[in-house]
Image (cartoon, rainbow, N blue to C red; front, side):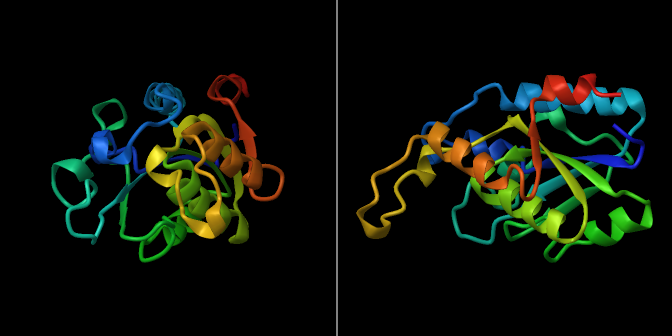
Length: 186
């Protein structure tokens, strides 16, 4: 990856371990994100963390222990952390200004959850002119998203939700790649 490519870790937070989310796909997402992070740090490449601070009463992602980063991807001193209250990491944060100020033109994105904050951030990043690679195997979706209740649509599995979100992003907003392939790139 070129030096101007930043790794953006989205919402890999303790609150996603709450059983309220239900079953999820890809139980190895955090380990893969940690591997990607270790590779980025070893290269001395820019790393950016994003945390969701929910404003919904009782949310597992409300400010407090649930909002903390999971230990395997916790920020190191000096790594920027942007906090948001909506799905996009660009809304209400200084993320775009930061990226432009330090000359970042490309992003590798991973995190939780694929159909929400990851997807929204990827779409907006692409619309803002950034080149985006989605580390699809370092993302996951939950069963809590499976029954939307619209038009009698049947519930989807967490894997189907994840696959659908990645499919909608790939080719238009992102290039979806596996962590191993991203790390193997020069």
